[in-house]
Image 1 (cartoon, helix red, strand yellow):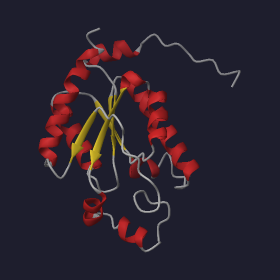
Image 2: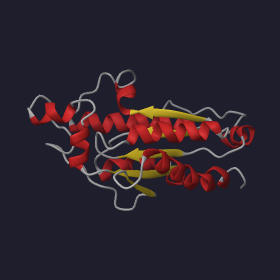
Image 3: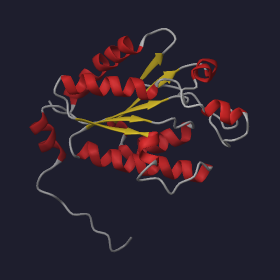
Image 4: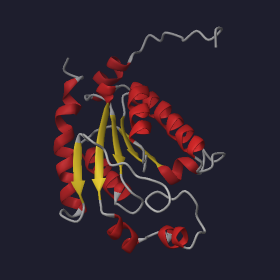
Length: 200
């Protein structure tokens, strides 16, 4: 590590933000499997894209299928999974993109760790608050059924904990708002953030 010297580039983040016309940051969706995180994240990205915002999505299954395909679901590997994601997200923020990240990220300590890597000013936490009963009833991927049968170990909400965010930047209760309405509310919430750094 002593021989690593970061290179200073002529084009900086502020220049990329100016070129794109908005600030860059991470919008981090957290919640149980089946809570609707990915659905909401996709809708939010689509609406931002329609408004000319430069975005990039990072999603749990997609990242584990490539960058993190050598990691298990052990406690240590789950933390490493999030560390790598946070570092990638930080690079995208520096490139001027709004990162839409959708990850269960069940532990408060891990989300705090992610926030420290990305930077507090560039991290917005959106808690998709859906009761486990509803998530399990949906069971879109059949994962809860497998977890109940003992076919999947360390499954969040069944035999591994989920710690709800204490002070999320925004909380969405999916049993009270349909995805379209919730996505519109999130986009409205993000608009101030989109302008903040860019206009400084």
